[in-house]
Figure 1 (cartoon, rainbow, N blue to C red):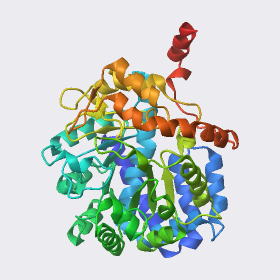
Figure 2: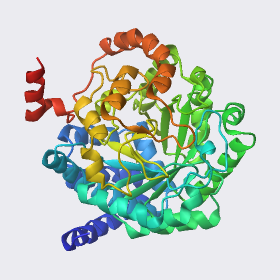
Figure 3: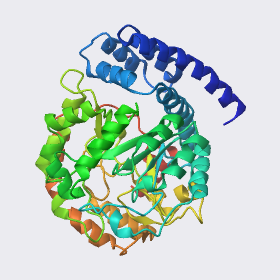
Length: 475
């Protein structure tokens, strides 16, 4: 951090301490102060109408967002609230967003708002339909390598980092060291929760800028069918421990053709809320890897269910006090596919920089290329120039919903398969998606055309002077 950023951080920290004091004392009376604080520091990034809506909502005690905010204030450790507001609000929200936008213009390429990393290929579980457990325990990113990624990324404006695997908490000491080394960043880990204990919870509280996200999928039966016997109870006990220690945490849900009913039930959501879950990240099952099960891809009817369920859940009156989102069915809010560095990209445990955690192809590695070099190399440039892959953002993915797009990208760029067990030909991968893509196409068009959609003000290459000139040549 520069001297100016450190000074600003100190000043904002004092304001946060005062705000937390107000909120802890009487959240009902002082919740409006939280909106005032947010507008003061990020008002230049978001429309003023957003803050007006927040103030109106803050006056309604039955508003689910008011209830969620109060639960965070009442249940989360004070140090975590303070450090998370500094890291996410000031680091990622203010400094990060401005720098990312400026560098997209400067470098003429995608610049990510977040980066996903696999600290290790090792995993102590063997979940059905997941490739990670097949990778073995031999591949790891060192602390210095991850620290170098974070330093490079911060120069570009990225202040949010997520960890997958393998099981990332196998490397929890290195992850916590990154947290304390970079207090201006937020770190999050998707975890099977087997390695969460009292000692780790105390370390999370001290760091303050780390969010565990536990994997769970509905009932004990539906969860353990995919994740193995005993997994459900292990995760439940870990959640109880996290809540006891005042940790802000979330859940990760992979929804499949077999579990959609269970992971969207009122019973499941109510139980998660009671255990302390504040955010829920939902992921459509992707048929990746040699042991992929295409039959687990949710059907078009199940996708429509997810679309309507998400909007019901986030409605201030009909929803519940937990923030849930789905990268597949929320494409309209982020302008379609966010991979390839547009909002994020993935680094696997061998150091390969991949456009997406589900797209195992690469032409760059952190041991031979800088992040900026990778973003300017052919694979990520194909994403930059090709996005959105469909103007119907309910069909965002170049693999699942538009498999011919991924076929063309990989063949045109010569990107190599990074599958750590068996290199996967792009035609083999995409063939697993063709049936769903064809079935979903007409249904997605009907759904898209039956509703209105907000203006995302998204940055696309086709809207730049260079993109317009290139498109005009092609006509």
